[in-house]
Image (cartoon, rainbow, N blue to C red; front, side, top):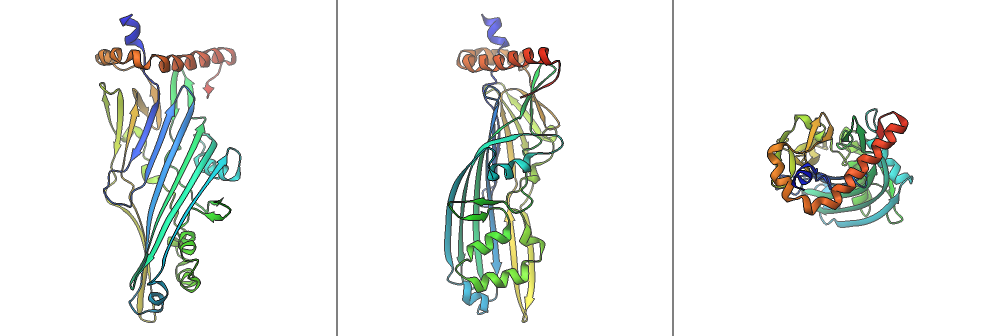
Length: 322
């Protein structure tokens, strides 16, 4: 019995968790929970962006914006195949990875507060999606393709948010939406910053984390059966643009923080951005044996998945996408 327990790979839920380490409020997080038994990945991204527009006290902009105080809270759900789900799926797809968004929910929240010298917009966009097509069986091993994880939405992402069609991505759209009650100030910003790259800067952007997982620092904790990958990107990501108007300076700044950590529950070895599932080393057998009773049911599901995949491979004599 002990021999059987030692051989069990407790791959109940391969979880890749991207967590911000920075103490500031301008931190984005990405969480991908992978389950080889259900063959689904749950993607939970929280994109936080701070937009600051500064202007001289007493200027026309100051008069328009010093009393601005607005907020927006919108939520919506999208089924697989809908235009909203397909927009996200298109950001995941590449020549090396093809995944499908089965369904997703989006929550958009932002506040805009103005005073005599600056307007501050804090925007949080939470996108949660259930994704299939991540797993495959290659040469008898379960492999998770994670090349798609560091996604970016490069253009407008227009979604029906509570009967409001809104672009939830671009900086310019966020500024205009937040100033809906102050059309003159919105027009000023559009006139002077609309043609600049900062206006078309995406807020749904995790490309800072696109280095291969094999280049991240890796650690396996046998006690918790967790493989951890860490990657720290120093500082913040900042975009800024300024203009002079009638001898006065105006600036628009966008700030985000890309620092993060990846942790994998289970024993996984990276090959670039592929994660290959293998049994823990022999030195970890004791820890695996202690956990065997707890994970037995889920592990059985994992091996049933592998068995079904092998049978299908025998019939098709080819590599199995899942």
